[in-house]
Image (cartoon, rainbow, N blue to C red; front, side):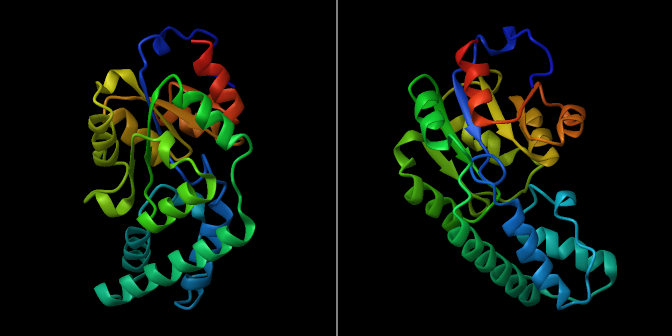
Length: 225
């Protein structure tokens, strides 16, 4: 569902940067459940994952605890983050929620574009995805939340990815499912392609140049440019 039918913006694109969670794997449910389970131990029973999608795990805990006046030092934040990340990885490993058409579409686009992967998740989560799908060689570079100081919507991770592709920001498109990710992409100077089945308006408002509902639709958008 592109925002409009014209695609002159894509003519000069040479690089595509993918987010991971919510784009190449549908892991939102796993992350939401893992956060909920850890937060319930602190009396937080109204966690809404969509409010925090795209944030790094420690930052989510730190912000929620601060807002609720829950005393939590660095050791507590680190422990919560470790338990949440491990639980989410276990859930993802059990369900294997790879997005439909992920492998063929990534291979198709890798034949035409320079690809990078830029995830707010841990390096371990990124590596599990790459090893499970066999797509490691499709990406010229991969980045995780462990590789940057600042989290989305700060553009740091996308700026690093653009640099790794040896191209200009204006020649890159970022595929993101989160508002914070689209904001980060635009701040990095790249185009933003929103990926969603039910949040198109929010992604458009955040600055997405186009919004698609599937990887097959993304391939059609880019291959027809």
